[in-house]
Length: 231
Image (cartoon, rainbow, N blue to C red; front, side, top):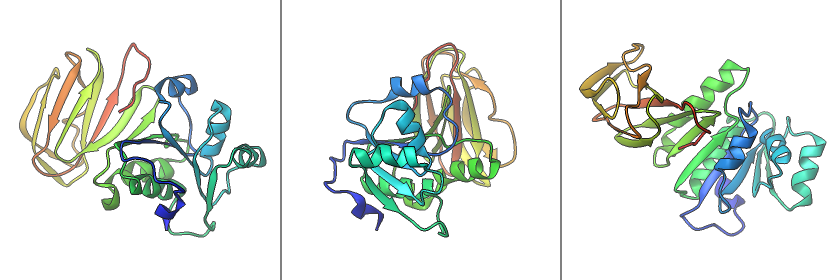
């Protein structure tokens, strides 16, 4: 069981930060985002990012096929809990790591390294946001100045004027879409999957409020002129 990886379950106020094995857009910016009380989890090749950033993950999850000897030595030396899975398995390493993270009932989850050269992996990682087992957890995929997350009901975002915001319907039809604080205000609109109505809107101030009556929307927030801030 994934939940059994926890030696002593942390309080439910914990924020979980997962490092996956994809590209890390801006390592210095990642360090700026981390908090001392974050629970760090490595998903397979994400151990590389942890080592290069000088971080010790509490848990390493995956088949370890892309974790080299230096990565493993780094985590083993400092007592990281390792849960190794067979290479031939039904779930990706990131899905396993998210399952573990969500079992802790965290305040939210940040995922770094979810995007890379393999489009199939990137798309699979984005679609993990729709996993029914993760529906009750706020999860954000972070890449440099960009953040992806989903909204099923409402979401508040903080940014600066000029930030880009895109709304991509993941359901066949999303109803009652309203958004304030944007150049093109949306009021009770219907968005259809495969259309581009919600692409490249802009912040007019520091806050945007989104509401959705039914359906699921992928929210892409691209920041301009500042250091990345995820979530």
